[in-house]
Image (cartoon, rainbow, N blue to C red; front, side):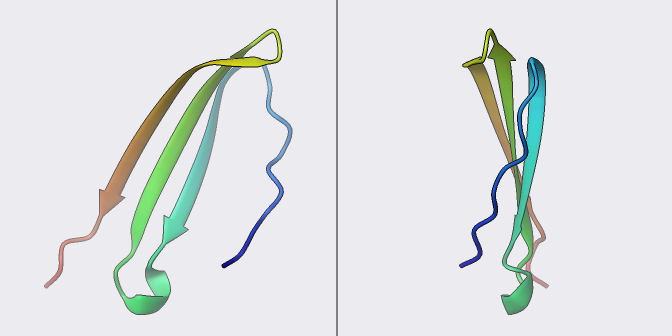
Length: 54
């Protein structure tokens, strides 16, 4: 497992994308969005997508 330090966040919406499963041929992406106000996370959204098996 690889751990990375997240960049500093700014006020407003911040987007983070995580790609996984490439090494085993089943790529997928998770997208996390956070809304920051006064240095606090006040809202979040999570989206995900994956390729269909052939």
